[in-house]
Figure 1 (cartoon, rainbow, N blue to C red):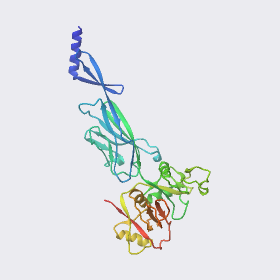
Figure 2: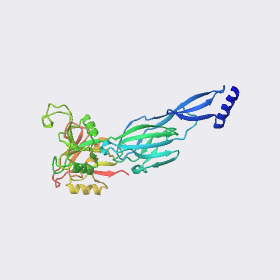
Figure 3: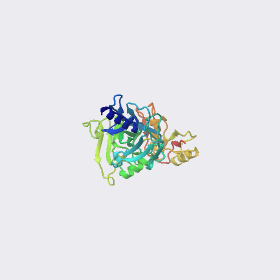
Figure 4: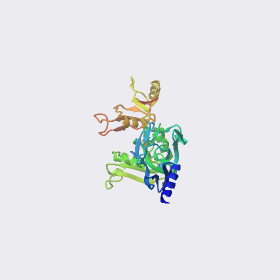
Length: 360
């Protein structure tokens, strides 16, 4: 009877294939008949990993969010898996739920929403499910989740995407502390930037940003960074840090703005002209050169990302006059690198001009 029972077990497994798979407790198991008619279990575990859980990129560029999957032990032949990517905006966007980015099964794939036509899987090697986004748009930052589904099993990892950029203070041409939240938001956007988040302002403070005027942030608070405590900036008794007025009335309260730019999609340059120009002439000169007068955010991006250094005051699109300094030197402003500002002089005065050309 024992030999007959062994024979029946052998024939059953032979009819199902030498290796019969099943799923239990988060693992795949292969039931293998040994030479003595018995069975032993060999479990195969799906692992999903990312070599870079935090990715920094620049708006307008492309980025790859790493995601790889493998099996332990390694399989001798590939399995059919489904790859899904999800995106969840930062809390500043309203704490929205996860949204579909794309799904892929074999060579078939589908992208969704604003990601349609901008995303693909890299697939540079077996198990590579990395997401490529090209180009990056202003609202793409947030939490991305890569999910690998194999039969009844699924595993996932999370990659956070943030923009590498520069924070700069901005105030109205009418004067200080004259913008409500909505006006500050619009002012930043007009300068090819966005209201900064607290995390971005804090990182800028850690890099040395010191500004004694409170400005709107994207979360509706008014804050300012202080590296050197002084009486005019909250007093000398307070430690350095980011000072906050907390949430403010977005319609009634008035502050400056802290803007954040992460765009290097074009070239900013100082126009070499035979004479200095008033504001109207400056705009026309840039147009005649095939470009347009540069915005404040574009000048800051050129200073930070490509090391633009020019010791010549020039008009910008908002009517301000500024110049970027990477290497401080005599007659070029203060001892620290930065974008120097002369504020908003009368537009009939003569200055140079900074122009901007889009790269195709």
